[in-house]
Amino acid sequence: MAAPQAKPPGDARDLFEAGQSSYKIGDFKAAIQAFEQAYVIDPRPALLFSIGQAHRRQYAIDNRAGHVAVAIKSFKDYLAKVETGGRRADAALALNELQPLALTLEIEGKLQPLEPEEPETRLVISSPSQGAEVLLDGGTERKPLPLAVVLTPGRHSIVISSPGYVEEKREIEVARGAVTALDFPLEPLKAMVAVDGPSGAEVTVDGRSLGSLPLAAPLQLEAGPRRIRVALSGHESYLETLELGRGESASISAGLEWTGQRKLAVGLLIGGGALFAGGAATGAIAIVNHLEASSIRADMDAGQVVCRTGSCEPLSDYNASLATRDTLTVASSVLFGASVLSLGGGLLLYTLDGPSPERPAPPDAAPAQAAPASLEVSAGFGGARLTASF
Picture 1 (cartoon, helix red, strand yellow):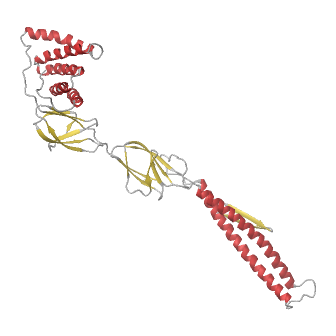
Picture 2 (cartoon, rainbow, N blue to C red):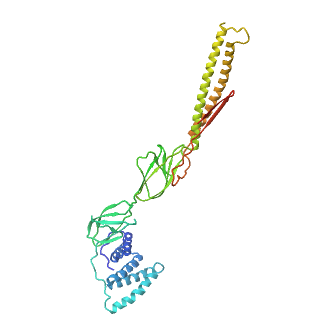
């Protein structure tokens, strides 16, 4: 195993992962270089096993017997360092296959050490983002990741992209004769959700408040299932679960209906107003009758009206006005009292009416229109009945 004179740049973990990526795509020369470079930085026994495997696979490609010798030495060193567990069984099986091959090659005079080679300058790029591709140095051909490529030392430009992810551009420096390992976890594109509904309604996503309508811009949400709720005091809450894809656009129109409590509160307020108007009207009529009775009484006291008998028309009018005044005064008082109760109850219900609990929106149909609120107020006085329906 050729060891560089100076410690190469890079992190052993990154180099090990670069070696794994190269091994998976069948670039065993890149895997060998990455594993050996990682072993110089951090001489862990597991790397010896990986080095042996990579040399073993490379021999199957170029038939250079030196790979067999290095693989055998790597597996033996691994067994010496890992006395129990690990991948001892795999290493022993590999030796069982390689040692007869090495004996045959030695008999044939082919088992020669690997000739020293100038280490190549390699770039190994990987990404956990599915479908990621790379453009190198302004080229037009996108290459799938992981990718192991031999480059000239120095500065290079790369562009990493994948459907549904934010494109990333990077300027990198590739060291001469070493493996430069880069892993790019791309940032997923956010889903855009436009929300429309009554002004002032609160919008929450997965239980987190994101503001009130109207929103300044569509919501930017992570991909996946998202529970979106639109809630406003006195209204039935709108709830919808969207399965959002990366970079997807969606819209929600939340037509919020009044809650039953809000309908009752408004009905009571309207009813209270009607009762107050009724009380004011009956009170006004009672005042008119009082003034009429007072006028007749004044005429009688001034001697302008004289009743010779126990009954006369002015006296009858006077008594009728007084009776009507008293009846209407009672009716007005009752109506005013009922209006106070109705207005007070309606105001209390209105004030305490918050958003309704979460309720899923119909999956394939518009929300059903609720029947309008109705309130019937009825009052009777002396056989007369006042009925109002709202």
